Picture 1 (cartoon, one colour):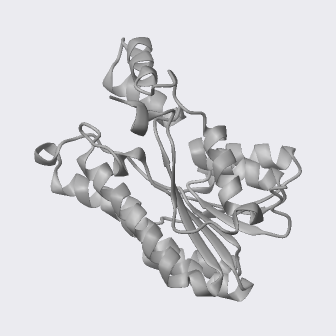
Picture 2 (picture 1 turned 60 degrees about the vertical axis):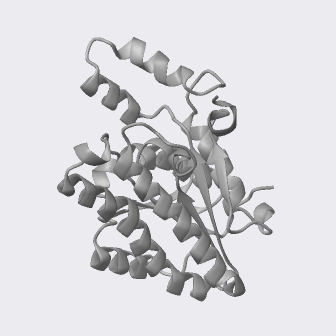
Length: 254
């Protein structure tokens, strides 16, 4: 079960964090994985791990916010079976503390970047005769997260795009779903805490961990396992759905 043999997958932002975990697991399950990162160096840790497993992996330096770069990269890769839109950036701020430049930056990567990859993927899925798209949304689509105005706005757009694409291409055997994680322990989280709370790293880490009713942050590998299911043939009856993976955050936080 959950084999990705003879499948070609693109994972944006696949060099670190959740994207790396997805790239490694997909390769382990037999997929030919194509990682899109800003620089090839950003994906070297993922590449090394995949090659150690004997998997197939290719890295493409590509800015997902650049329409021409994305089109050229997807055309170079050719027919694909799976697209994981994972690349994204974060921003802290309420609407009145979010500068226009910050808002534009978040929209360019987290919204336009997803659009660019969706737009470029459809012709390649048609060559394969089928396809699966998985977008990384967020619990911020479902509940109010303090000081995350621009990020929440962008992830809400990702969920809406998921529904739209699922509806428009269901007749072409192209499925589209999304995942909404709560806090996941990645190098980004560690960097964010050390930058914004110097000297209080352990205290803030514990506070963030306990904000999930389950009492801890998620692991990238746990997100990857759900991604594998949703991109495998075992989930062939699922499209147009969002899956919170949140340690009870949405339903049990009261």
